[in-house]
Length: 293
Ligand SMILES: Nc1nc2c(ncn2[C@@H]2O[C@H](COP(=O)(O)OP(=O)(O)OP(=O)(O)O)[C@@H](O)[C@H]2O)c(=O)[nH]1
Ligand SMILES: [Mg+2]
Image (cartoon, rainbow, N blue to C red; front, side):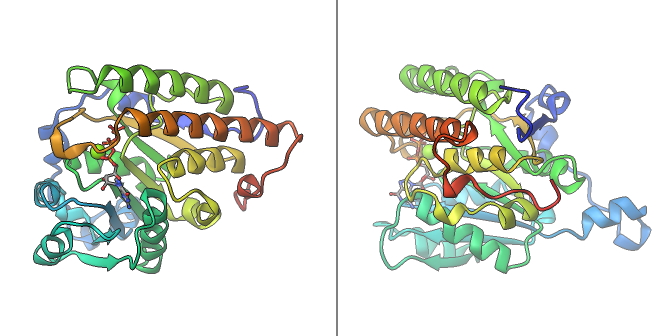
C-alpha cells in the first residue's frame, strides 16, 4: 500500500530520534529581532502560531498545561469549552486565554471543528492542538512545529510510542489496542507512524484549509478521520516527534467501554478509506485534494 500515489510521506524520522528531554525542548533560545535574521529565518519568525485547546472539565489541569507552553513563540491560545461542568471557563479567563463557549455539548470532534475555524479566523499559519488535561508535554511544542514552520511537514504528531508508554502509566489494554490500530492504519494508509492516537498535534494552515474536517464525526474518531483525509488528499507530509506519556486521574476519561467504541470506529474509518481508494464506495469526506498535487 505504501506505493499508493496519493499517500502522504512521513518525514522527520531523524528528529524523532533526537530525544525527549523536556528541558532541551523547552530551552529555545530567545529569537533575534526579525531585522537581524537571515531571510529564511525571518520568514519562519513571522508565521503566526496558534494553540487550540478542546476543553471539557479541565479546571484541575488547565493552569499546569498553560504554564508549560513556550509563550515566546505563540501568538494566541484559544480554548473552546464544551459545556464543562467545572470551572474550566473561569480558569481560562483568569489565564487570559481567548475563550469560546459552546451552547451545547458537541463532543471532542465537534469541539475541534470550532477550534480550527477560530484558529484560521485568527490568522494562524500553524495550529497546535493541545489537550488541556496536562497529559501532553507542552514544552515539546517548539520541536513539534519546527518542521511545519520550515515547510518540511504539514501535519506533526507528538508520539508517546517513540518512548515508553507503559512506564508513563498507559493502561495495558490501551497500549495493545493502540499498537493494533496503529499497525492496521499504517498498512492501509501506507505510512510508518508510531501512533495515531495522540492529543498533541500540529497542522499547517494549508492543510486545514484543504481538508473538509467539518464533515467528520463529533466524537473521538474525528482525529482518525482527519488523518485518513490527509492521506487521501495526497502530497501532504506527515512527521512525528517523541513525547512522554503521562497518565493520572484527571487526565483520562476514556474507559474500557468507550475505548472499544473508539477502536471499532477507527476500523470503520480505515475500511471506508480502503473502499474509497479502490473506487468501490466513494466517500465525500475523502474527496479533497491538495490544490497543487
Ligand atoms: N468536547 C469534549 N471534549 C471532551 C469530552 N470528553 C473528553 N474531552 C476532551 O478530550 C480530550 C481527550 O479526552 P481524555 O478523557 O483525556 O482521553 P484519554 O482517556 O486521555 O485518552 P487516552 O489518551 O487514549 O487515554 C480531553 O482533553 C478532554 O478535554 C467531551 O465529551 N466533549
Ligand atoms: Mg487525556
